[in-house]
Image 1: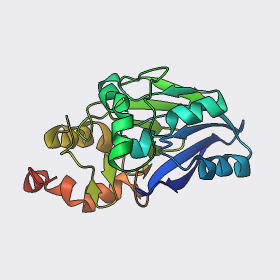
Image 2: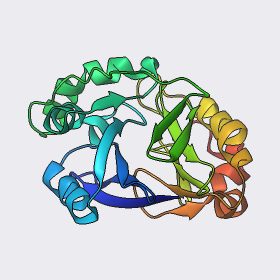
Image 3: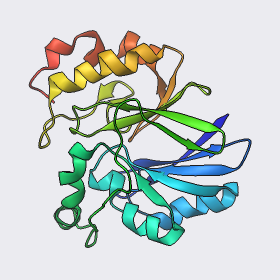
Length: 219
C-alpha cells in the first residue's frame, strides 16, 4: 500500500506530496515547488528513500525547486507531459514575477504520456494526461490504494484555473469527465492546494461538475 504525506510549501501553500511504499520504504516526491528543508524533514521523519521526483505540471509553485532537489538527492525528474516544457523553460521568469528567487529551468529526465506507469518499491502509479489547467498536466493514480494525486486539476468544491497560457476550460472539464470521474467515487484525491476530498463527494457537490456550462468563461 501507498502512504501520502503532504507539506504546504511556498507562499502559494502548494501541497508537495511525499508518497511512500509501506512495504519497502521507497518513495517519490510530487511537485516540490520550494521550501525543500521542510520537504526533506518529512522524508527524514518517515525514514524513506526517495527514488524519483514527479511533476504534475510546470507552474512555479509545483516545479520551482525540482532541479535543485534532483541535484541534492541524485534522482530523476519525471513528468509532466512534454506540452508543459514551455512552462518549465520559463521558470526563471516565473520566479522573478513572484519574487521567489532566480528559479532554474527544469529539464525532465522523462516526459509522461497517457497510460504510462511509474513505480517505486511495490507501488505502481498510472499516469493520466489531463490537460486544461495547463496543456501538459498529468495526474497519478494508485489503483491498489484508491488514491489519486491530481495537481491543480480538481479541488474540494472547485477546479483549477484555465486562464493561463494554453489553458482551456472546456478541455479541463473534459479531462475531469473522461479521466477523473471514471476512476470511481471511492477514490481519495490529494490536490495541489487545500484539503483532500473524494471523487464521489465532488461528483455530487462540486458546482463545476454539476453545472459546467454555467461557469464557462469565468475561470
